[in-house]
Image: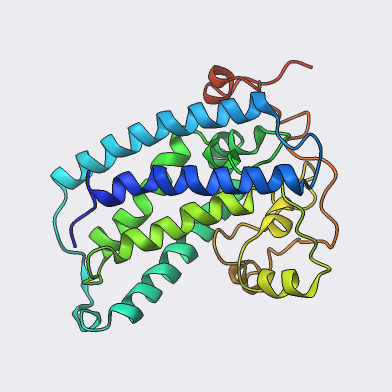
Length: 263
């Protein structure tokens, strides 16, 4: 299937990102998990980083689309007449792959070196998902390319893959929100049994990550339970960010050059 280029799907990504971040920033201001509800320096760094990486992503997708073939190695033509099934399978495949890539970011020292940029903020809110190193951005951009242009030909209907990816965009704003989401409540616990949320993902950003490293799933929490990386506790962690040995300079240039924070 053709890779999305500069069409509605490319333009929809920043719109969905902005909408979900605005919504969950507002909810986080009304029902904050920690105070202050918004750290403006960190939020500004996140937004500028996200805007720059989006432009790089558009250029990368355009370059790939101009130089890559149309069909994957494994033809799954039988899915062409089953759009709902193909969409569900695509969603599960993307989320499953992202789980393992994210887990590798934490377990492979070379990848963790770059992924520290995302974990550098000590004030988590709905914009925190935008804070990433360009190396991470390239990997995340290549996941759907490898899955649906190199490995598999799902014969997805137009818009299905785009919708799958936009679900991840919306979930990213929600799971990073500085929003009270007590897992002691039955409805929250039921949601968390399947879907990511601020209570679950907060434990991915705990400063004690070297002792409590897990909760890698993006949209779904089931992968962490299946593969033994669920580290959720009932109450949210007290501190976020990186410990002293891993901390980075909290500035645009410092984060992308991986400058260590001065003691």
